Amino acid sequence: MTMEEILNINIKPGWKKGTKITFPEKGNERPNVIPADLVFIIDEKPHSTFTRDVNDLVVTQQITLAEALTGYTVHVTTVDGRNFTIPINNVIHPDYEEIVP
Image (cartoon, rainbow, N blue to C red; front, side, top):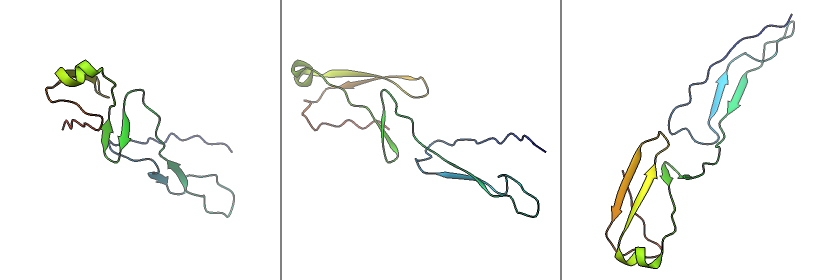
């Protein structure tokens, strides 16, 4: 007899690639055999703007030499849809990083 059951997975912020979610004994059943565990493994889908660096999200932008020397304003839309405007008044060099909590 075929049975159908809906299993919900609540993905939590910060879960990393490779995180395993196990539903014990939810696999296929046969007579006189204990059902196997059903295991899902989290994978990351690439994002068009952000890359992950451990627990941080990284945005890389190319700017002109004039913007690097005179200042630049970064406009970022976050994953949850908020818009940030981040003014950078320092001289920007090739390895420059601006960390925003």
